[in-house]
Length: 416
Image (cartoon, rainbow, N blue to C red):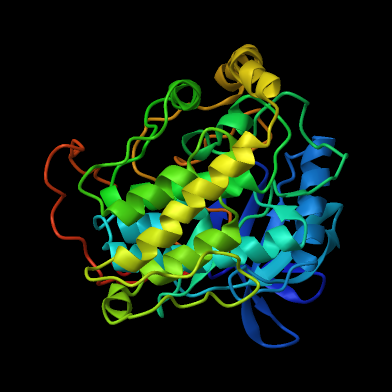
């Protein structure tokens, strides 16, 4: 759209401006609300998106967001249909995606914990409201200038217990690098999938490396054969928490609320150094109280260890014969998923993520290479992401993590 052209106006109210991102089925524009005189982001289903499932998923996203109200979630403002094309109006958030923030290098454990605690708290709220996001990744987490986070893109979210499907049964959907094992197997999802994905995100933020790089097929299959590698230079408390979050069996993972409580403790290690008695965690989070500590992270260690123990108890409650068939059945289902993935995915170079689009309607959506379809404005030229040199777990930690952050906008202003 050029300056000489009259802007497209949706619903006689939203004047579309520059395109902030393009997804598999929709475009997101910066826009001006001519009634309330404020900037907004408008997501419009593309004319070429004629698949009925695309329309159903688009409508489902609007309905899902409309039932949620939390400072850690991008807010929906309006929705409707124009010229037979559905649209969704969302708040325009100032900030950058977590993927862009981490393009500068790994973050410190304290900052990672602070950001992660916010994301986990927002997920806990969504889960309490019966919503599973299903596509938690750096490109769907917005970090504002004040270091507050917002989860975006509920395009493939699902209501817990909802029997209506907008994808084929047995097909995984999401971003391959962050799928949980049960998603790879094409099984029904629970809130545990978001916890697993967040665990992979936190590992990537801390280390600068994806846990499961490679093509969508390689990345997904690796999920079924091994756990993510947790570097031994990470503090023990971090290792315990991440190990619990990325447990292969969803029954062994902590809840998002428990993760939020533990990360909240990890975010401020200085507070644990002066503790002389356990401090109870505020309700409704059920994470254990912190224990006295003589060194950084010692108090959260009790919480992290308790999460692992509670996960084992939950896993033990699953009948042994059911646990025994998980691997065999999962391997068979994974073959179906991988065949669909190879046919439907555009491929993945395994490069670090940049602001990414909403997942397409393909069985497994690996969306990193595309531009954002969340209300995030990006620089006029696509930044080049340079993958950090891998650091083996047995070697010292990578260069000191950064805590300084520039900003563009969600809409970003493109400052790096």
